[in-house]
Length: 178
Figure (cartoon, rainbow, N blue to C red):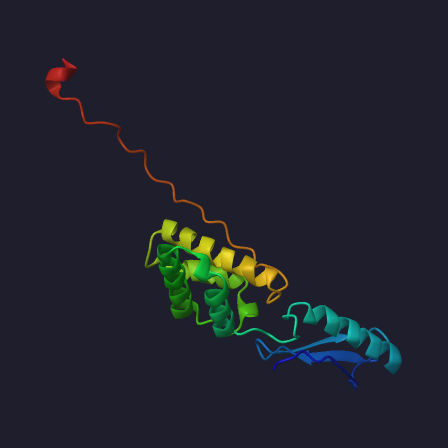
């Protein structure tokens, strides 16, 4: 079980106490000033920051893995879908796993989705990516309703490439022109 734990630390080069935690998704250490030299006020600020950060976790206070999310989605949602829709959703999830290899559900962000578009554009049409996004957005909305994530990531807008104006109909023959 991975949890976020904000601690109060003293830095020699700073007047105020600092708040620090290690992000369980990325493994990066984050730190900010508590804005006070009082240990008690810093502990209170740490608790508030921790509560704010925990809102991005599931209702049991842990981060949901992609595999666990997928299994729950398949067990709870996909049984109510048509067989052809189940195949489509399964294909989109397989593609997303192959291209992006998500390990945690909270890792999926607008930046990840933009990267997904860039990587997929070389393989398929933009309309296929739009369909993939519809499936992923429905799954993310379900994850939010289940308390696995706090916010649904914003999906990038896909713009259609402009095409040259195509001729309408066939060309007029010389006889018809005369």
